[in-house]
Structures are given as structure tokens and as C-alpha cells.
Length: 98
Image 1 (cartoon, one colour):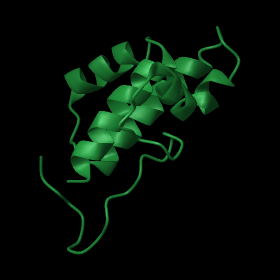
Image 2 (cartoon, rainbow, N blue to C red; image 1 turned 120 degrees about the vertical axis):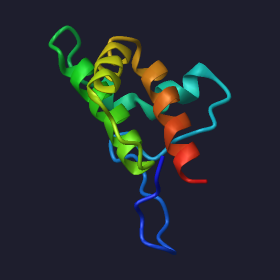
Image 3 (cartoon, rainbow, N blue to C red; image 1 turned 90 degrees about the horizontal axis):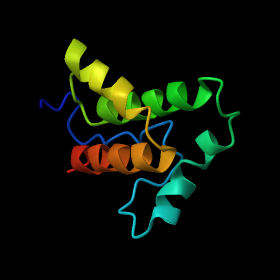
Image 4 (tube, one colour; image 1 turned 45 degrees about the vertical axis):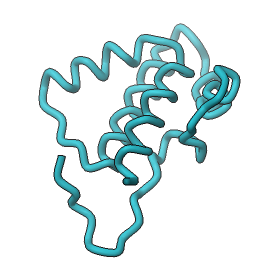
């Protein structure tokens, strides 16, 4: 994973991950970070699209290059609960901030 940020540039926050990236002590905290997704209408595809964007944004902010299989796995992860996606996006974002 190559850092593409200019020197002395702080890491970007995952734009679609609210402002909380963890660490999360409870599922409730992770759900709060994904509140913007829970507020979307369920069973319309909006949740999956928002979770996929959250995960892709986290990868982009951490400088993670994604291949076709990586994107397929992100799409699969976007089928889980928003709090699960928020937790994973938080891991990626925090790892990229190091």
C-alpha cells in the first residue's frame, strides 16, 4: 500500500463515514457512525450503495488501490449491516492514518 499524500498532509477522513471512525467499543457506537445509512429507506438498494461508497471512500482515504476482486468483496460486504460496514471502514481509515 503506497501513500500518495504529499509530505506533511494529514490523511483524509472517509467522507461517507460520518465523522466517527472508531475505535468503537460497542455496536451502538458503530451504528451511530452509520446513522446516515440507517436513515435511508431500506429495501431500495440505498443502504447497499451507501455502504459500498463508505467502504470505497475509506480505501481511497487510506491509499488502498482496488482491483476487480477487491471491489466485488466490497460489494459483498455492503450487503451486511451498516454498523458492520462502518466498523470495517473505520479499521481501514485508522490504518491509513498511521
